[in-house]
Image 1: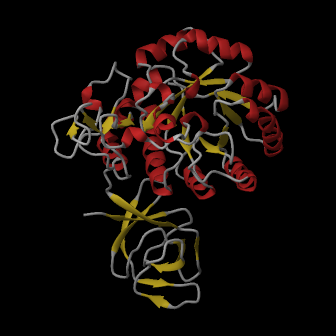
Image 2 (image 1 turned 135 degrees about the vertical axis):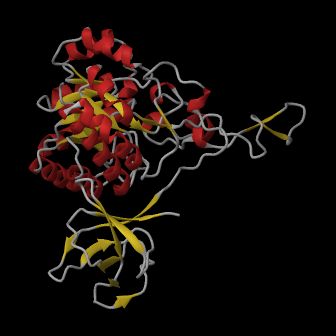
Image 3 (image 1 turned 90 degrees about the vertical axis):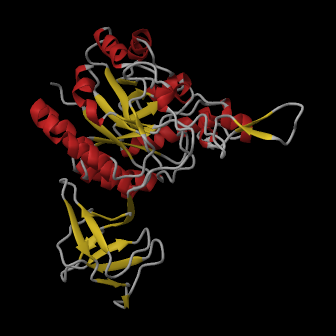
Length: 408
């Protein structure tokens, strides 16, 4: 069985390093311009340089998104941006716009060009077209079934790679080509400014009865008629490999380090186990399922992989995430006395039971024995986000271990 790449998203330098340590083969990131996650923190050129160097030191690739649908005013700046990227050597650019693709081909021909899902890649003719233009990889549209992907694989050159989303949020519009945000708020999803109106609560109003709101579905709170469940294919790794997919892509460039660590670690083990033997994969399937639900998520669906989704793929009664764990921080260093340095993300207190989440799959329950500020002053709790703290856990920890708390 061919070993697929595990491609993990990163919203910041910290999350990139987490993805690398927790099992990514490649990481995709956005710069400060020309990506489709304008609300993500994204990477400055300096952080991008450091992140690429860190990833490469660990044998991990980095892809940079430049997948907006460009307007005339964007093109000159795109050329300048690509000249800057050429100097820091990312492994690929993820592009959807043919004009942007042409600029990348001219300015930085040595950097691979991958075609974004935003380009609506639904048939092998499209794959062949992009291959002839010099693309190394095409990201399949989310509307494709495994059967269709397998047929594409059989009808394209062997050295053209297929990348496919296997986990994460689903857009209700056709491969992300949504006009709702622009229409309702003036913020263009295709320029990276989506306000996610598909997650809003909707009711209907009859034309001659203004102000009288009626639920679209039988629920007194209204309904979230566009609200898709999250994609999760952890139970179908053999089928994904059999379809000929070269890169398993995880959605989530606005997610926390805890989310990225959880998903990367779980898919890493599932893929590795499957490649060792089907029996080992099936034996450990309950562990994958228990672990993948440890991060914040909506209910799960298999999307279009096994045919057109039914109404069961939608969540009508709420737009909230399920949350089993709270992210407390990531270990940034360990002192000689064993105290862990973290930048605190959520409040926790001395005496609380928390978990150390390790890259190898181990979860260690510990009790917080002490919390100290940078001056060494003892504290009963850590109430301030981003505060630098030193934590006494009574158990050895290592850099990049994740600290989390299970919610009741």
